[in-house]
Length: 160
Image 1 (cartoon, rainbow, N blue to C red):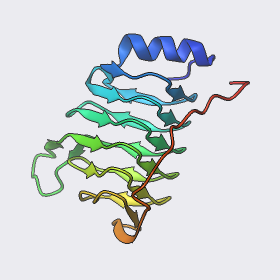
Image 2 (spheres, one colour):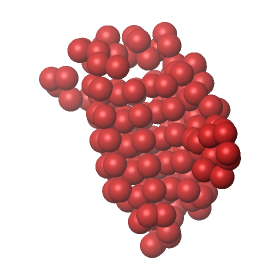
Image 3 (cartoon, helix red, strand yellow):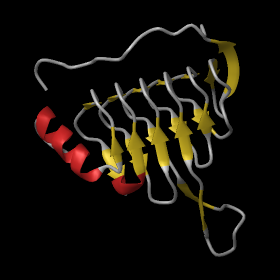
């Protein structure tokens, strides 16, 4: 949905999204699929072109989560083994202080642990351990992040 002004997007978010925290940055062109099933914590940054899917199950985004451009987070997908193209749904949980880089894809049923980093273009099919860094298709652990994170996201561009 394209809403022109930052403050209009915030008002829309507070009215429509199930749980909408404080100090959230919503960029333009974010697709919220069934926003009544989506929760967003405090101090989050949601950039342009992302898809947040709450159709199949709950999508919970914790505090201080940074989601870059063109990220897809899905709670619903088709079962490839089903003869009738059946849908499979499962909740997605993104815990606090997670950073998801551009064009990553998070599939249904995934829990991303606190402080984890998802590299650009990664396809996350399984749970991600806290403070781990994952990359690739499918995403695999490539390192660990400092577990002493001490920041609060506060992105507010002047012209938006």
